[in-house]
Image (cartoon, rainbow, N blue to C red; front, side, top):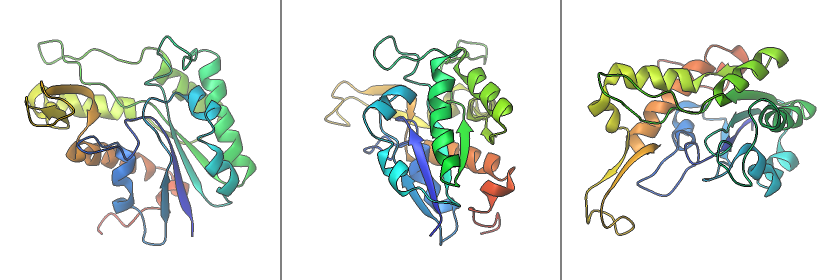
Length: 222
């Protein structure tokens, strides 16, 4: 059975409700004979994911004809042991994953980080993640790896929806609604189930641009 492997952070992983990453929604868009293995885990950077051994299942089981979707960046910019530099160690870590896929006859796909929800008035938004999205685009172009520019796509979606409609994609909790957040919660990074599905649709749209990726997906009319 061909497999789509996914590695990344909390914006990608299956997560605990009410939080959901876009990888959680992907199985509904792939062919019935395709398996999705979402290894993404909250709080991980491209470096810490590897150092903690979280990539090992893919290293052991990924096979020729599989697909590897790679999205990091949210935690690479953190000023701790997870940190990577967008000019050096970040693309180096990403290329480690790409190389591992290629060595096994699988196809790597690079994704830029999904945008955070930071509106600043007048319908405009802050550009989050600094130089990291550009580093992914550069690596993909240099190495000839398929690119899903989720940063660009999600930002465009938010601007199209506007501030209030965009907020509906994210986890927002009223005081007392969830015992983990007794005072309520207004998240600007993490999606609810509806938001995860909407972001996943962007990923699927980008995947359809590459025949090697589109082959894993259901027909658009299904």
